[in-house]
Image 1 (cartoon, helix red, strand yellow):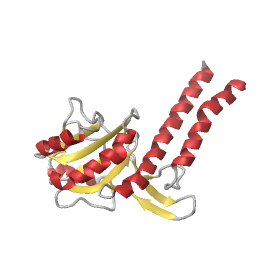
Image 2: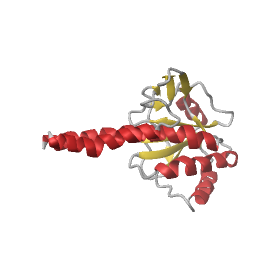
Image 3: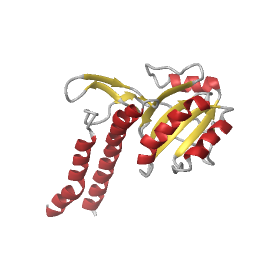
Image 4: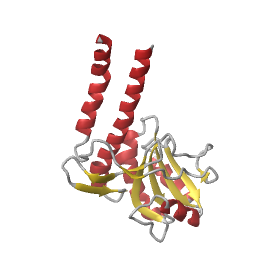
Length: 220
């Protein structure tokens, strides 16, 4: 019994406290699912890595660059500094941008600038044809749409089970909330809402990991 109480004190209490203090803006205890079971990325799509980029078993911030890379360079920079750089050390965290084929060189130049101050080892691009990008975005079943360049300033949180997370339904105050994406144009949107929601979902997985480790220790 003492061993169990010690494990609770060491692992569970800190995680619960973290969830409480991390939820300054997000008043959901657990980040709701907006779209269940989205498709993983096709392994046939070209990537900027040797290995295929997949969403399964990763916590992913997913974005769509569109073909006008200079136009969205500021958005990418905002995301890199406000969200990615603060969470990149979480072992299963990644950023993935889907981009039209033909934008590789422009994206490489953006990365060269970012890479001066940010370690981009978990920051990826995957290239696809316009029709493929449109079809993939459509199956996310979102209210928002891509623009005529096949891009959007919004980015989306995808969990390890391929669910798109955001804010949906009633929060703890009983108020209706809906948020499917986070606007990378707005530093405030990233710094407040998205930063808070990423903390919540990372805390969910940290808590699950602690529970699994505790169960293993008890059975040993």
